[in-house]
Length: 104
Image 1: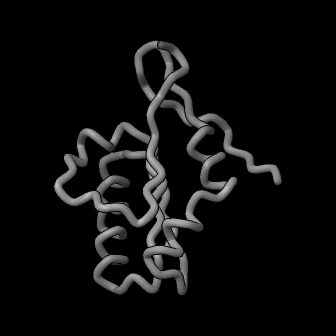
Image 2: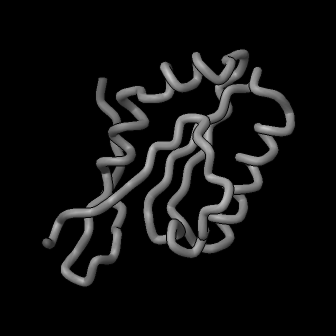
């Protein structure tokens, strides 16, 4: 159906084993807590870089001083959700970005 799309807002999730090629056409917004450790932050940074190189529409935030639980609870802000819904599909199924504005 024209205008429908899928998108992902990953809050410190587990992406290991995913096929990046199948995700690269999907808008992805990722968050990870800075207090989750350098290894975990590095894994998400690598995923961001890999998807970016593949041409994905991807954003990545490190939430400083937040552990895993707090990151999961605090990631779904109005601004991040607005970014996800600033996309739409067209008749070809291609995701297009609309002008992104965030109004409080």
